[in-house]
Image 1 (cartoon, one colour):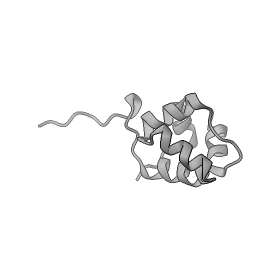
Image 2: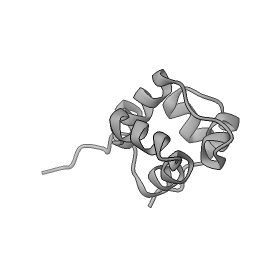
Image 3: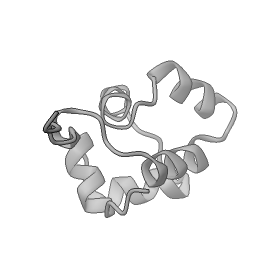
Length: 83
């Protein structure tokens, strides 16, 4: 489970910690460019984000994704294993 702060999440997706907080609370929805960054960093395809947005479930799903996921993008890649 991730313990990323709103600031760390924001750095990964290119927004402020305040924006991350607003996405989690549902008082703001991300722009398309930010949704693309979320897709990359948290393995949540844009089409699934749009579906959640249309169903009025974006805030709860975003909060769940960033809490339950390890970032998979360039800034969040796991170190190479020694195999």
